[in-house]
Image (cartoon, rainbow, N blue to C red; front, side, top):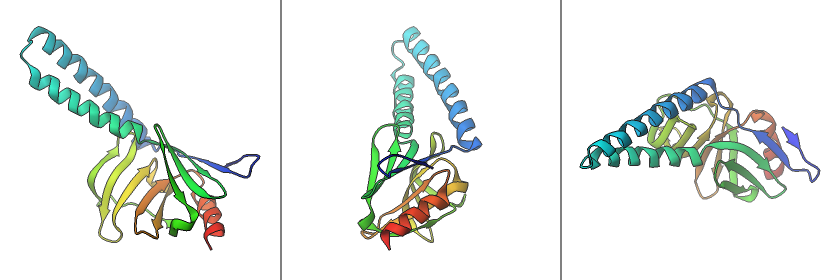
Length: 171
């Protein structure tokens, strides 16, 4: 955790070894696929199928990449997850519950990544229902439930400090 001059707190999202290895291996494999499909398309101009499949895979890859969790910022008003592109803000007044959560391998991916750029996407669990995940390391994850019933699972390095900081504000 890092504190700034204006009392904001910053928490880093650490990626587990599984996330790091998966991201590197899949990236290298997809670059090879792109090279192969573009070469095949250049040689055989009628092979739009390989090109379409490659473009679709890279669009999905891009979706996971831009949603990869980078850091969390706590201000006096809200919780903010910084992603590669954009952020997610949750006002403290909208938080009804925050606590540790350990996603199980049995959590079903509705649309998500199981390690590519993190565990990112929409998942489902029989205990908490559907949730949006932005997790770098499952060992450091926590759950936020909003008063509207939305459920998010995030992860940060100093998860217990973050939970304590938010609980002090929402009580």
